[in-house]
Length: 165
Image (tube, rainbow, N blue to C red; front, side):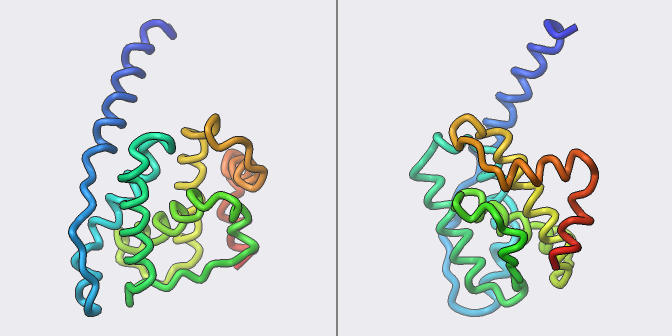
């Protein structure tokens, strides 16, 4: 059974890698509040690209994508990330932190829900877990993320995050 699934798994990996590489950093300018709304779809795509692209590939582009995302997050008038140090316990991983913030912003944009701190945190942490799982070898073990993985596996992630808000 595993041999039959292996080609399918390989094709899926190739598709995900090819799809992840499609994102192009926009030529952005943030001068007024309306400018931020223009790039909302790009924020979602940038976050997805960061999660799906291996940490050690396309390093220059990765920096450009992170810079775009951070610049957008710093100025967007629609989203306020109420970041709790009780939730962001993986601060030693800047890569994970930006993915967390991008995940939160993506939740807000995709759901037109800009005030739901719980769901924003859940999406952010889920993105971090996905990214960490795919890059565990390169990142090393991060205990804080491992704890979140265990909570997610037990179906207790939401309850835990809610208790920290």
